[in-house]
Image (cartoon, rainbow over all chains, first blue to last red; front, side, top):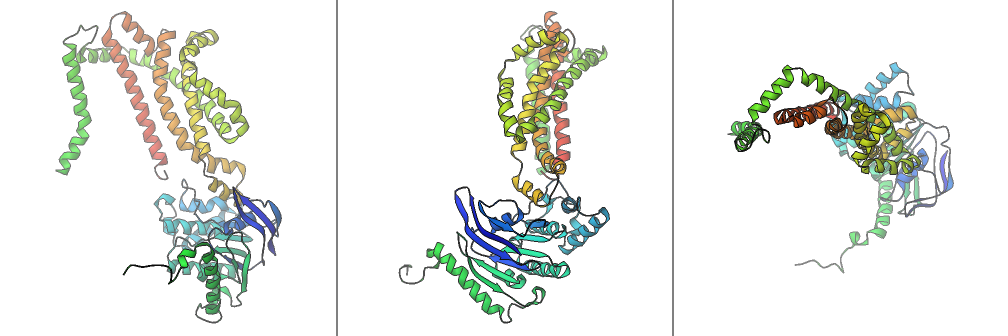
Length: 255
Length: 250
């Protein structure tokens, strides 16, 4: 089990996490959804060891090799597409296997014909796909994904959700997937954890039994879970954007 | 029409140059040739410099002195700039020195170099002290602008220190370093000629002084054009190389 136990974390002036606990099972896909700014990214950074908790502890990640898809692509602009993937493989994978992995994942993401291009020549979506290639190809025990499909259109998003599900079936491993898209979470998660607005608390923790790669969002129990999660997130948003949800009565419209 | 306008745009600088030479020719009619020699006479002096071998003999010395001082400035300035950029301790230690180096009057360096090193090494030394702050400051700027997000990425993927340096730090510092190098090389030719004029008897700067004493103003003009050409050539060449190297990602 991987867990944050009673973690406190302040970044600058902002208390991002206040006595926050969360756990994820190994060899499962755990999806975390919640309103923007609730501390999802900080949670991943703590798990990756990029940030240290002010108090509390991180359990279960010792000795794990971590791969990470950041919200922004974070590519090396002075390296080609293929070299960007090779960058993370160089010290961890034998040379012959490197080329094989690069080809496999670039092909999966539709980038193999651009392997010798530089990131400058790629669109925003292509850059994000390259970041996914890099994270997938890197040998890992724990894959952290921070809204990885943010800049992609819906059909491509769905395609990538299936790829992640397939990849997980192939080599299992632990995946923690942060998103604010309920559909992604429903299609991928063994568990979906709903966080409240800052300071984050766990509002709901839903287990979905159907295997990730074989789900239909229209089939029970997914529509009911979808409605429940949407309700929870809307409830959180209402606290922070009351005007956005204002209806009838007091608001005056001309005519 | 479009062809015509792009043609004029290409030729405009040439017309500007011709206009300048015409005005110069016109003005030289009103003054004695010692004050303002006509363009033809300057051209004749330039040809004479080439034919007599003076250009290579004196120019070569100036080039060697300039490049020695400039090369040393890069060799010392780059690592120093990296260290200052990376370490707050070294930064607070060296910052005042770098600033001091920049504001110290050139004449002080010149005279101190005469005392410390002897006349022959003055030009290289002056180039060294005038260009090294440019190299250091630009390198520090480059290090300060390194993207911390990329460092985080490299940390997650457990990239070791030496690769971090070569593949993350250096490529990001390079554009800043090269900008510093281009500025520094521009300064080099001006500084080396000035120092030669004041300290030694060979090289372009020294020969310019001789031209003045002998009232051969056209020679002085010719040498000046040699220095301008040297500056332009090295600037263009470096810019071309930098563009070629960085174009694909900058």
